[in-house]
Length: 244
Length: 73
Image (cartoon, rainbow over all chains, first blue to last red; front, side):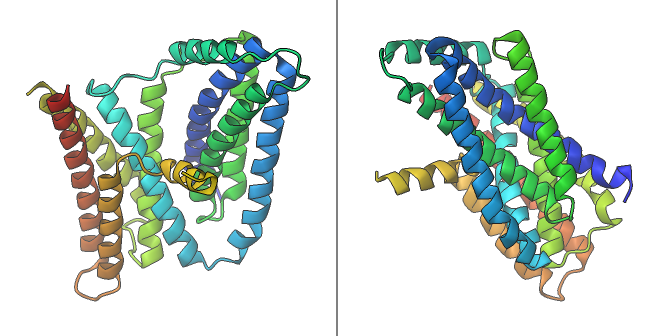
């Protein structure tokens, strides 16, 4: 196994996980600063524990699944997941839907949490539940991506390392800056990740149903190129359609 | 909606934004699965058809979404 073999998996996992971690971090910071860190961290810890339980349950099932079935299932999920991100990024670039604004989301979360403030309780249930939900949901997306890009190719550990590195980097930056990571080019990242995840999805689904891609895993490069060209054309066409 | 229903909808929402695109992708996958299991087409032709239909489905969806957002707006 060489660097070229696992670099695409680690990169995809890292980029996708960093997008999810930035989204979760915005809510965690808003809750922590507005409602206090004790309940916020308790909610985040519960979310992470639930995720760990899900991974512990899924792990043995994945190990026992036949490779072709695993490739078809993870390929399908990755393609649905990736094409959803590509669609959203294309529509944002075309101006059809608004760009995601971490600063605005952070301000909205803080306002909502201030409005619901409940004094006197030892654990702030509103903050803890809000953070639990966002950590669990964004974490589930990370788990799907890690399993999707890693499991079918037997590269679960490199994929997990990419995800852990991304989450650690975002948490460290959030802890240092104490404000949302609004300078992260979220839409460009989303398009890049959507393209990579969709390419992996198509590749694994094809392998699972018996399509032998030309040049093996190098076909991923061709799939990424076609999807990027589609995204470029889609942005122009959507912009044209929106103006008519 | 009940709590399990809400949870299922939330999990489905991780994979589906636009129902028509998801259905379209599912149909393409079903057809590709069938095509790959028959000797009619070679791997190259099936792969090319797979890539082309996914690209066309995405293009059609974003153009339609932009078109209708304009009509509503």
